[in-house]
Image 1 (cartoon, helix red, strand yellow):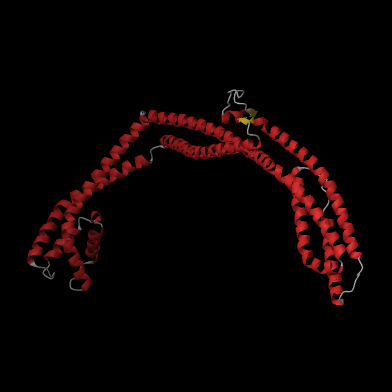
Image 2: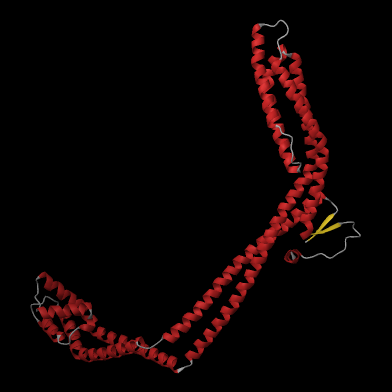
Amino acid sequence: MKWIKKLFGKNENSSEETGLKEINFEDLPAWLDSRSQKISSRVEKDVSGLFRDLDASLLELKESNSRLAEARVEGDFDIRAVKRAKSNRENVTKQVTLLIDKIRVQENRDFKALEGFYRAATQNLNTCLENMNRSFRYTRVVFPEESKEVSESLASVGRVFNALGEVILVNKKEMDAIEAAKSIIKEINELSASIAAGEQELESRNRKIQTLRAEASEASQALKDFKKGAAWQKLQNLEAEFSAAGEKLRKAEAGLNSLILPLSGHLSRIKKLHESGRYTLKPEVKKQLDICLQDPVKADPSFFPELQKVFEDNALDMQTQKKEKALSQVKAAITGFPERKKEYLEALKEFETKKAEIEGFDTGKLVELERKEAELLNRARLLEDDIEDSEKKLAALKEELEKKKESILANASSIDSSVKINF
């Protein structure tokens, strides 16, 4: 029980000057049992005479009930009154017999057993009186003496129960306080055990967090060391080269598009004229025109001389000014597209080469170190969240424990105001 003292804090102050009676918490159950035994002994002594009286009263009740059952009609009564009296006499004697059968003098003199006996017996007595009360009015008329004897016997039984009730009532408050204190002791022990287990679990989790943090630090250092090595430097260089190749490809593609995009409006118009039947394109020219509109970088340089012929064709319905502008743009494409297409293809080839080099680079070590560090840190964070929840639960348990402590102090004080409990 040392951990209970640790939880509450042992008070070493002397109580001699205050006249208090100190009891250690672990000794409290024995003290309560002692108090309970004293009360039970006192009650047993008090009720011994009452149970003798109860035996005598029940015997008298049984005899008076038999006399009522066997009584003869004496006197001049109306036949209907006699018939009613006999019929109701059967109910009276039946109820009394049931009552006698249900009341057995208690062998167990334990306080709770006596209390249970008292409650059941008084309830049976009240039930008997309620069930026979109306019948008594009729039996008294024809069997007055016998009915009176039964009534007096029942009253005698009732007086014994009243006396027993007074004995129980005098001691009930203290006995209830003792039982409540015993129950609270059990709750305190369970709470204390839960708190001790919770604190041990917290210590264990904190140790695990420290271990995980240390392992994560080692993984982080290994990652830093790896990034200082040749493999990491090579990967960095590759990524820089890949980025540069991507930028070069973007510029080359933009250069190609800058020659074709100005023609897109004219190309769309020619396509509509072809589809409407107002102008006919050669199949290969139509195919290249669609490519220019959908993906200009895939256009073939041979398309632009053919496109020039289309613009120069008088059959093409287009304003002269627009034709001249379109011819100027297509001639620029004829001149510049082959070289820019070559630049684009070279940039694309370089980009694909660098991409393949990066994809083929063995990053297993890097990925493993990064994964390990992230996993360790994540496990540590999850444990920290668990610790926060556990600390809240522990705080609630400790608060509840303090309330139980106050409650048992109140119960002990109601038993003996001079008692002081050392937790």
